[in-house]
Image (cartoon, rainbow over all chains, first blue to last red; front, side, top):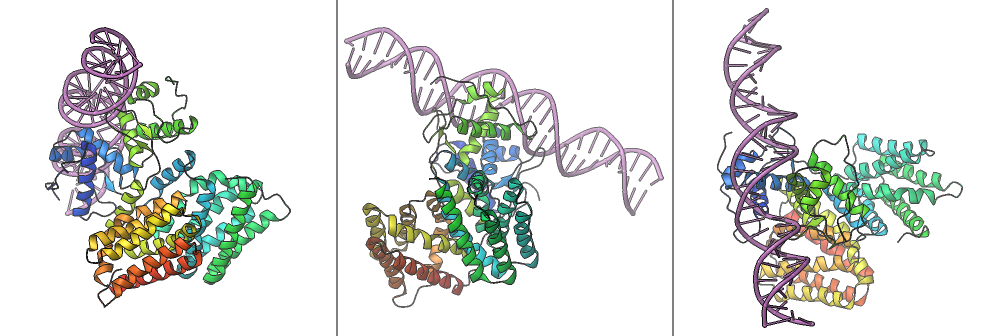
Length: 241
Length: 241
DNA sequence: CTTGTAAACTTGTATAACAAGTTTGTATGT
DNA sequence: ACATACAAACTTGTTATACAAGTTTACAAG
């Protein structure tokens, strides 16, 4: 597998070299039909081929790595990356941080998506996935006095359901919300102070898990809807925009 | 607004300088509570402050620009960016290109999201938005013999609805799918060959627009569901995975 | 007070150099 | 013939310098 010539041309109108180079590399990936794990040419070879400096190629690589199209690591050549919600996470966090997205809006999207993922998961989950989902629900109850751990199992619960939907796009989106959810989770927890409210919330998770285990999409759907109704209500009662 | 010291420390365990620098900059944005349009320090100042080379800062900037957290342009300082689906578009296209996401999976996500956006749009749309949505539906019919134009109005129709939902996250997600939708659109079009099938499809768009104009979320929802049912059926009939 | 322009600043690109991590190929010993 | 060790070649990470090109600032001229 020797170094074959990169024949894709630069767009003439584009502004800066780095942008053009990014374009060339993505076209190259497409043209060569590269798959996750496949190697890209070295920085130096690309630079020579495209007649730009190594600096430009490096900046292009960094850009592609930022949106997780490729992976970089010292000494190794760049490789095509597997899908990953990392970039979208940063984007969403940035949106919330700069007040372009509200927590409530996130919850509306989550509700929309997760009512669907729980339905699909009920229909498509493997035995292992069903087991994992139920495990995280049970662990939440186990750690009812250790909010940090309960939270992590809560997040994992929802993420596992998304993965069990067998649609990677859902998994990416749900995964992307984990960061911001982690930051608003304690608000929901602190505002469930009345007797049994936390147990009730966790019990809903267990019930959802049971519905998934039993392969009952309608029940799972209904419970997930109710869970989000409740969660959003709690957030609003807490005065969150 | 003079140059104040950046007090955020590097994480010690992180691997490479660029990653650390990205972390510092994002923390800086947070700490200073910067909003879209606000300026970041110049590359040289950041480099001096963080005691790294300008190269490292530049690569960090490029990374942040790639996920659209900041905007770069020659001669100007970097600024905080408005939310934008550009990065997510590339991610999704990469997923489809590398066969990690199928077109049908995209449509499932779109259906899930857009059944919600059309409901919200019916409730929240401004007059101008309602008008724009209806305009694009009408233009589709107008250009029934110019598929390229019809397609662009189709995409704009769905995107405008997402924006009218007043939840930027929906708009980002729907926007992110525009690229791949553009690539699969002709498949759907080519496979609606029977008499009146195309008119029917476009008429559904007009009916959805009317429901939005009238503020009838249930009707809009129902029509959008039917539209996606039909579209997905057409794709499957066409033999698309 | 406006306008024009030069100076200062800032980003874009190229080159050179070396450190540090990885792969490859070969010589060596068994 | 085969495994191991190790050096050489390759590759990415980081720094420094230099200059081109775009933008802002400050000041002088009218």
